[in-house]
Image (cartoon, rainbow, N blue to C red; front, top):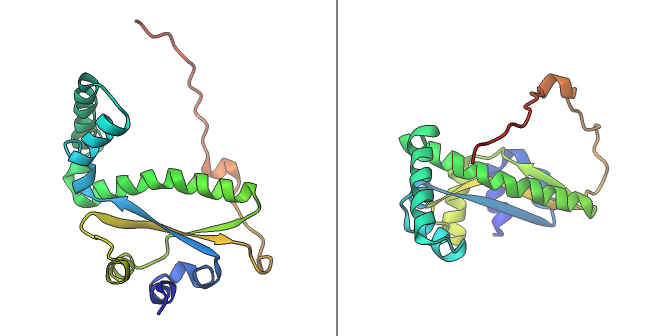
Amino acid sequence: QPLREKLLPHVWGGQKQLPSASHVIIALARKTGFMRYDNDYVQHFMRDVQKFPDDAIQARTCMLKKFQEQDFALLDSDRAMTDWSGKQTYIALGNMMTAAALIGIDSCPIEGFALEAVEQVLSDDIGLDTTNWSVAYLLGLGYRKAPPARPKTRQDKAAVIQVIECKPFETRQ
């Protein structure tokens, strides 16, 4: 049975998109173990990928520790850290949807799904390590077969956006 068919009963928000999209991306968020300031993955990323010198790694590790422990209290629960990690994947989601739209490809982000059931299917079918990864969202991509039955609706910008003007200021060196 194809993976999409196995996922379909658990993806209530993508009943039309999951079967018909030419491509479906499943975004994964790293769980607490990977994202802690002192984890080997984070240290490897700063050292080997970003090529920071040791003093910069130490400073950033201290800053990340404060951010995770105090500023956002991400270490208070596994859920808090996983949610924060998932938020990082939404940057990629926005970019994927914008890039698709620019070349005329339709996209549909899907958050309407039973998380545990979807993760179980992925674990059983493709070996997803659910101790270290969680599904953040699904993204359907392709060309729609027909125009939507209803036009897209949005609230007025003034109802959802508040602009706060902040003037620049001089910083001391």
